[in-house]
Image (cartoon, rainbow, N blue to C red; front, side):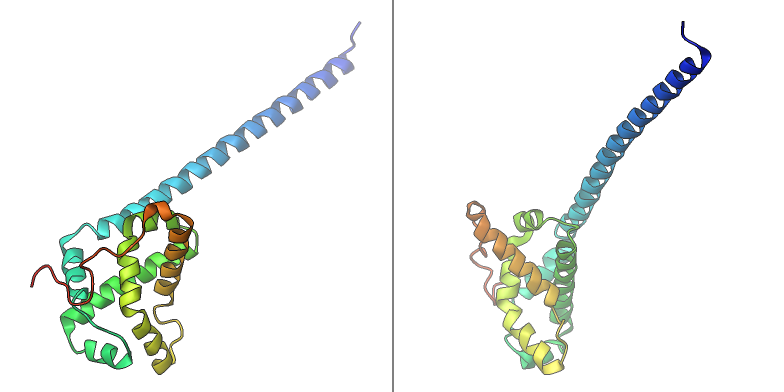
Length: 181
């Protein structure tokens, strides 16, 4: 016959087993929830990026930057005298700097950024990158537009790895082009 002590040991063993199974199931559920939360946050960040590019203000500033010619420090210094151009250049530049940080920190996937904004990113750096590098040197500010350069490099790396996306700067985006003129 089974004595009370054996029953106690069996109940304890069964309780520990149930607790362990419950713990494992809870961990798995938590891991799924964490993954879902992360994906949701990334989608929210991405939609914030998208929403910025889908506004009248954004259309106006991008129209203005297509009229800017900045190849060196002197062009940059002169640009600061034109409030409209300076504002447009600053808005787009700081927006790209922010996206560069998000990509660098792994908060936004470079694939998503490449699929949405590769043309603008490529055009912006190729149009102004030499000027930004000259500004860095002349002002002793080595981080000036560094995140935009990082973003450009990552998008171009992604373009090489995924030629099917055909990441190019659209025709008509050269300096001097403007829809409103």
